[in-house]
Image (cartoon, rainbow, N blue to C red):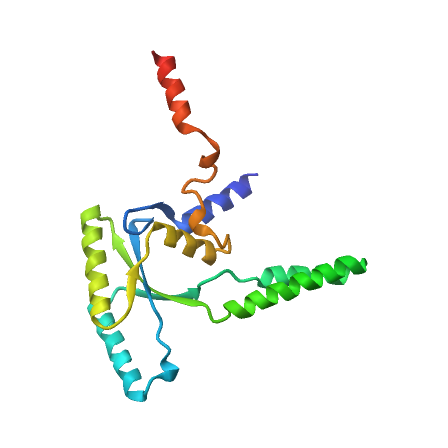
Length: 201
């Protein structure tokens, strides 16, 4: 039991995620700001156009040297689900169940193919402990710099950051619907506050 609690504490310390701010995700001693950049299909561009895009990116990196570039799936992957269904199909003797498992695998295969090219690109900036006004000003400054170089950019809001985290940690496709505090939706906190107030009186 002691070993398990230590592992849990170590995982929480490793992630360091503590709260959402009005402009990003609070983690450790700072706040992360996320900006989604719409990708450009360079395969249809001329060599000159690609070189211009590269120069624009270099200008962004020169103006914002401490940003990080993140590329990740824009949708949940099903590799583990497919692996599990394949193992079950090897072990199960019932032909009816095998047919159902085969249909499930075909369905996941189709979804995987449809989402294979679904990627999202983000610029991420970690800010040190600042107030809301400083975060707001920096978020606007970054968005302006990136947009001025011809990139279609948008700062992620709270629901979008939640969905991003859910996809990254293989938690859910509907991460934006997750509650801020696990289990809080099952408690009527307002009702409990009213009861507590009446009890004090």
